[in-house]
Length: 297
Image (cartoon, rainbow, N blue to C red; front, side, top):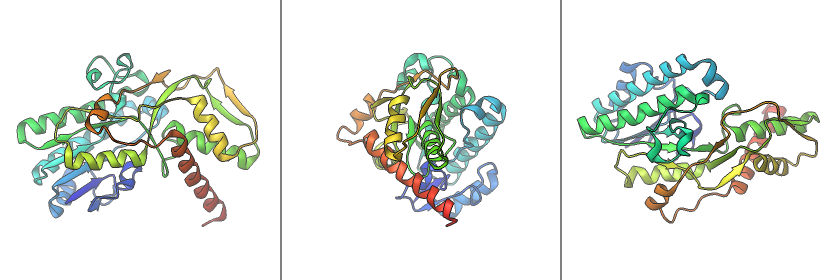
C-alpha cells in the first residue's frame, strides 16, 4: 500500500501509481493526531511525502520565520506518524535549495556551508528532512529515501512558483492583452530543469529499488539559460510582441547547476524529457487552462 501526502500539490498530483493520495484537508499534517489517524487507517507500506508550505523566492525572504516553522511542524509530524503507524519506507522530497551555491550542487555539498540567502529557511527546512530520514533509519530501521529535486516544471505548476510557470503565464498574458513581454533580469542565469513526469518515474523507481538514506539529486543534467527558456516559451506561445528585459532587477541566484552523476549511476538507461518537449507540453496545458478560464468553463 502506497500513500502520498500533498496529493493535490504539483508533484503529488502527478503521482499516478499510489493507492491513496491525501489533500491538506484530508490529512492536515500540522495536526499530529489527525495525521496519525490518517496513516493508521491505511497501514501504508510506503508513504511519499510531497506536502509542504510552498513559497516563491519573494515570500521565502519576507516570511522566513513562518516558512520554517510551518514546514518544521509538517515534517516532524509526518516522520513520527509514519513510524508509529508501521510504515516500512518513506520517500520525502527535499530540494537542491538545501545545498550551498559554493558547491555547485552535488550531494557531497549538502552540509558544506549555508544555503543561499534567497532561500535560507527553505534550504534549512529541506536539510531537516535529511536529518529526520537518517535519524529514523538509525533508531527505528525505517527506510528513508530523500531525493533532492532540482528546478521541476510541467503541467499544473502553480503560476507563481518556479521560473518556467511564471514566464509562461506572463507570456500568455502579454499575448492576450497585446502587451510587451517584460522579464526581470538579463536572461543570463543558468538553471537545470527537470520535467515533472521524469520526476514521477524516478520516484516510482525509488519506491522499489532505493533503500539508502543517502541523498540523490533529481536533475536532468541539461543546462539552459533563462534567455533560452524565454525564447522557447515565446516560440511555443507564438508570441509576436516585444520581449523586454528589465536588466536593473536581479532575480534569485546567478547560476544554479546540478550534478546528476549519482542518479545516472543508479539509473543509467533513464531517458530524460528534453527541455523543448517539456516546455511544449507545459505551454499547451497553461494555454488550455487560460482558455477555459476565459470561457468560464
